[in-house]
Image (tube, rainbow, N blue to C red; front, side, top):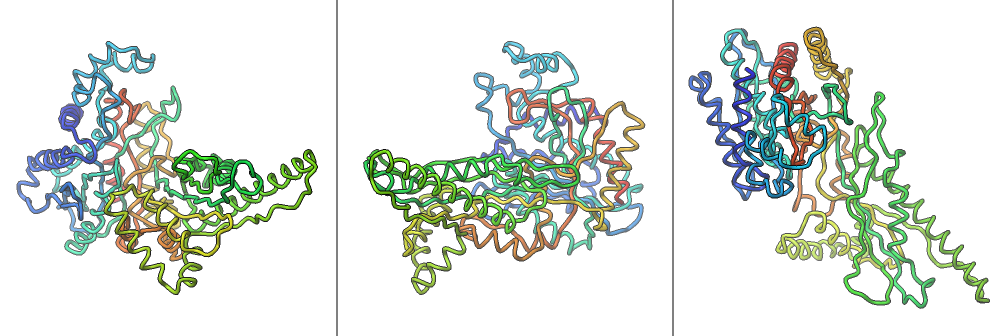
Length: 544
């Protein structure tokens, strides 16, 4: 298996498959061709196919393979997934031409000044370097190797496997979102009873020198909450007559950025606190008028918090920040008045924080529904510009606000794409308990055989396609997202109903390596191609 996997991962890596390029189409055909060489698919050609990604302008495809065990005819089915695309290669600098050549790249890297850890791995035969070799062509190779092993012994295999090689994971996850409906069609066709989803995305050390091998049950989620801040413009010579939107924005950021209070803590694990991805004002030119518009958006990781809960938490934080700003301004203004001999009068500003949905409802009533026609025209205008999804959301918020009679300072909270649901696998759920038990038993066996320190954790910490196999089943959670995401249904949508039908526990059991998305990206051969296939095969056997 090891020799087969090393040859295969090099072959997969040599095919460039940068997200958003025709390389994604080529890698799909390469994987299809590799699988079609297996005797099982020669006998069952209908069980291997390329599936078009719905609405994809590039014409990308997923690879889908179905393996039906012949030892016993049962419906229990495991889904194996992996993504085929990679990030770009600009970080390789003048070594770009070698980024997809594992053997040559290693030699070329020796001409560079690198840190000791990289040099040590570079001089070892146990590491392979290359763009995508770790994230995640090694994982895809392992899954293909498992299909080879299983199909060569198909008469001894009980249960079924559905393998998905997915496009666009590094982009907008169009591959997995399209595959959700493919899985439901296969379920209807074969009567499959899906038990769990196993991904083989990368597994990395948590800190320098960390040699633990992590297995993750469940996955982190992600929201992109945004704040539109409308202040009060004024001339700089009359500064206290206005309210600087940048000041409110900075106070909001102070309240929420890396605030552990907003982290989810579950079973001795904590999600990373929110961190800003963008903060800027919307003033286009230089002038002595103060800033009256600004916006912020955050990366917000979740383990258990749903969109409705997140928006409530942030609304409270924003209200506190707004209050702090007004209190500060009144204090500073009073001090200024005392110093200059002017009479002090409390400033006329009051904190007000609304969700997009709340503002929209007020404007809809004021305009007697005419805001919908205004928004329709605005959407068409923005779509013609092929605008970024985050900016699309912002401009829709601004358009609603522009048609509102309320002109005092206000903060509007809303969501922008994308949304990655978290999946918390609990033992109270039958399939969840089955997956947890299967992994714990497999890890116990691996510990007795191999000299590695394994640790089972609750949430895969990196955003991945795993998120789209289950979703919160609270209607208010979904409504809080869709009703507060301007343009939902036009620029972005999710197959919520289809995902709810699957509602599966997930795990990531991935290859070991280092430096994903860096030019020193590399995968460890011994663990990834000797231990990992056996570990995953044991989990599959336990599940079935």
